[in-house]
Every structure is written in structure tokens, then in C-alpha cells.
Length: 168
Image (cartoon, rainbow, N blue to C red; front, side, top):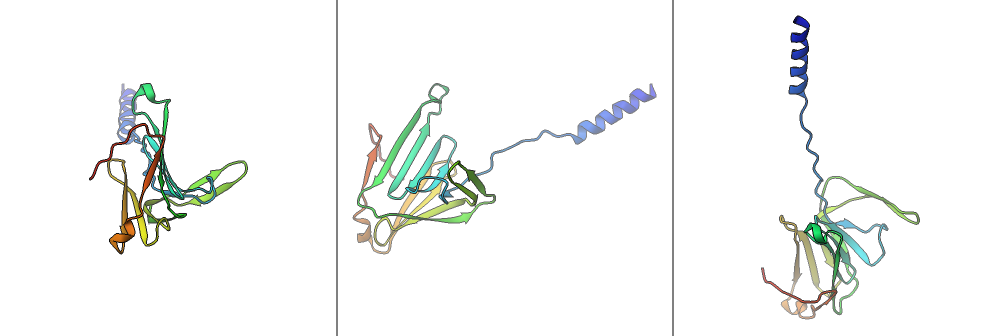
């Protein structure tokens, strides 16, 4: 009887020590291209349902559907910045951790990632600020020293059958 009691105490002590481990996916921000992707890609933002590719002259959204029925479908939409020069990505707000990519013909090691970024060089005097909102959307903000510098901004969408613009 005494050995059963000791066994019970050992079991109780072990179960009080053992805890359920919750493994969460760490936040991933904007990952700059350091040779791991084609040269037209400046950076990538992986989100829950999409890969957002920041390109030299636009943004490409590669989306998966949110329902089980369309989980195998891939929707691709590209926003081209009409008349834009070749952009240059600059990360801001470094996040903890780094990534390594190994492909047969090239690799990139210890690639940082950032909470937000800017793209410069698209239009003279204009900077595109990019960040991910708390609810997972991409937020873009164009800034310039003079309002007239924003006049040349134009977008052309490829892969969209219909367009809906909202102001927020």
C-alpha cells in the first residue's frame, strides 16, 4: 500500500511539472531579397493567406482562398506602378531571428526581416512606406515633400477581373 502511495505522489509531482507546450509561429516581417529570389523581387511579406512580393516596379499578391474548398486555388494579382523607376527596398524595425535559403544554384544566409519598410526611387521625391496592419493587411502610404510630386502616381492591375477601391 505504501509503494502505491509513493507511486501516486511521484505521478502527481510529475503531472504538476509537465505542462502543455503551445508552439506559435513567430511573427515574420518583410524579408529583403539577398539573392534568394529573382532580381525583380525587392522583398517578400508572408502572411496567413498570402505571399506579398514587393517588386522593383510594383506589388504582387499571391493569395490562397480562406475556405477549405479553395485552399488549393491560387489567385495572383499584380499592381504595376506605371512610369515608375526601379525601386529600392529599405527595412525598418528589425525583428528577432534570421532566415537562410538554400537552392541548388544560389543561397542566402542570415537574412533579417523587418516590421516595416520603405521603397525609394519609384518616382522622384516620392517614398512608398509599407507595413502590415494588426489584422494582417498590407498598408501602403505614399509621401513626398511637395504634393505635386505625387501627381505621376498611376497603377495598372494585372490578374484582376474587377476592381474595388476603398479609402481608409
